[in-house]
Length: 438
Image 1 (cartoon, rainbow, N blue to C red):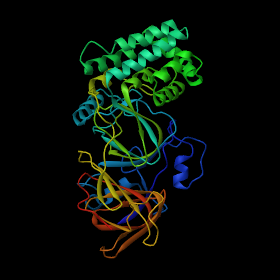
Image 2: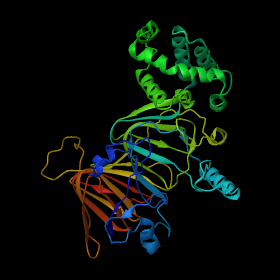
Image 3: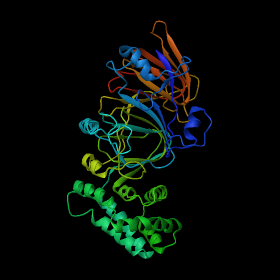
Image 4: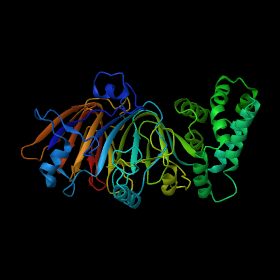
């Protein structure tokens, strides 16, 4: 069956006030709207759109016929989201399978309420996730080379000293010294613990950071002019630091951000975040698919619960060579992102009318795309208007969906997509067989 689904965007503080209303064709409320959840996660299950006077969720649909609508007789193991990032998210890490199961069991046994602020593990499931940019997306993702982090800390120390913030300069210098002398993974883990220790020099460094960065922006100090001439200033990194320091003044996560890759994703580029990989999204609009979990351990840039000891226990302290995750070209107009996890894969289909000229970002668009749907599929239209058909079903099924609309596709016969637009489709890791497009 082809079933329209919908949901109310989640109003997290970091959300954009207009990006999701623009996509969904709704009026802005003036409040931030951050995430649209399209799946069976109990935290915010999608609803069957306008089916009956009584609202039914996708959970209700699966429970009504688990073999027909579920996966292996249960809920969807993946969750599709649209993110509208108007301000930096928290620095965070997700556990692997064993860590999630053990952490959840331990907190259950200890009687920690599931809605308690100090709860680390909301469910016993891991949470690998893949993000594909719809607009330019800025993110911190994975540890970079320690030498680059030290260089940036020493740059801030020299600027702070020139501005007369001697205690702050000493704090940045101490931070840089923390990144030499031992194995790199151990240095990263101990830096995380030290940054949240409340040591006075850390506090003073973070306190003077806004003025140091303001001097860089206005070029009020000759030091920055010399640094620009010498090529030692990364303007993107300075802009990210300014945004983080403004959104979270005095937060140790601002210092931690210097240990991470700063990534700018163009539309269509992706990052994959495996277990233990520290990351934070800073801005942009994106589609995201993940294992259906809400387990998050935070390392600052937030007012929520931070458990740095538990985070340091599960964080992957290895250096990440390249945060970007490549797509596979499956056919004309068709890209797929297939990380090595069984819960999900994500496909992007771009389509154009037969008589329309290829262009306007649709040079690789197909006139028609046929996809197997041997497992349930959740799709969202991110541009234009498309027609989704199941011509071999008895009776045949068809749905026309415009930008912002979403469909749940039950397991069964292949689907055919035509029209003019862009569609993202999520399913289980082996849910698409050999798709064809023309």
